[in-house]
Image (cartoon, rainbow, N blue to C red; front, side):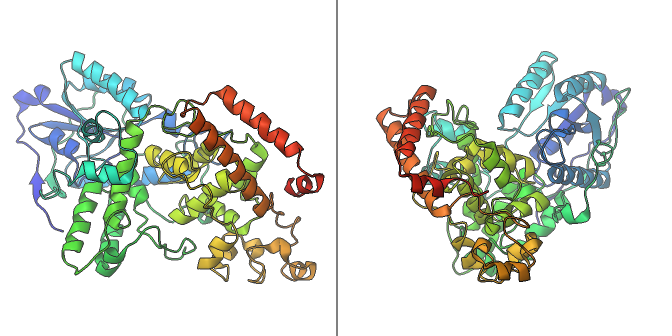
Length: 553
């Protein structure tokens, strides 16, 4: 898709230099194409200051975390962000500009820059996350008091979440179908989107503001990891556009795309676009991607439709953004009006076994190793491990799993990550808790030989395929031959799946009944009472049954 090329540089006018300085503040939206904030900042400006602030809230190393990285992000995502910034800087340089990198608390850094550079126009992409909402309100208040023009367009999503919520009477729609009906066709869908710029205004004097280049992993204070432990996906707009064009060049694949189908065990060539990290950081515009998919669909005889089509996936993304934006406390169970109140276990031992790929279920552990190494896995693989941790087997709180995903995924997105955990734990959106992903048979359906397991769990590479998904059932002679003794070289299962899943369903049945009886107004005391009742019921069980349900050490 070739669309108009725009020049946004105005002729230099020294007499207006102090009155036409603009600042574009990059956070997400790390791209040149379809960037309304960048275009508006450049228009009519003599000097343009493109700024990115290294925020210690996200980037400062945390030596106490369970994996390399900061308090909030693993090293894979930090590296992906830095690669995206390097690419953005290179693309800005081609347009006669460059990226100005500063360090510190973003609002304090910006206040200094706005004053020192005599900024008259501040532009940044609208962000729905609570952290940025609070930060942006602080910055807007300062800029408004200083008489600075503010432009903060919605361009990270297809629709403005606030518009959808307003159309729905002040509350977000809670089903995909109602969201799509309310949203309709995006207002910009048939208009040309600018995909290239020919020139930007130059950067003015930076004065005494401490500007740096995009830092390396080492300069941020991290020890770099071995190549084998890094994600194979490189950050940046250039990489995003290459990957998108490769995906849509296969028109038949685009036309027939049908989620949730796809092979979660496919790792040599993943069975999806792997565009999610690029959409997360805004290296790829979801609006441009939408128009490119539309163009393909116009030129094929038939194609799939939302919710399962490729276009439908972008609607899912917007749906989750809208619900998250309009739901207070969306990222937790307590005081979240759309979340079922459930007496989850607080079992750090089980959580660590899951997180560290030591559950004894090879399909689950292989997925968690891929997460640790790549920072990405297929959506069905995510479903399997999320279900296993919560309502399927371990009954550990979804917030604990969410935190692990939030840290390790390169595409970790506040709205989508929380929404998926709410969904997969049957806490919201989806309530068919009897439907469970088997940690044994589900992977076997796609990969009977266990190639995925052999790749990510090499300790099991010589295990015969008959036992690869249940190695604890292999005779000792087979284990010896495979050089993998269960309980020594690879752990025994932490639970009996059949018994554990049955217990999970029973607890959820009682929790759902409690939520229904109290009309969702369940207190912590109510949950404690339910826990006591469940524990008492368990004590009444025959001793032989209780022994089977204990952890296998």
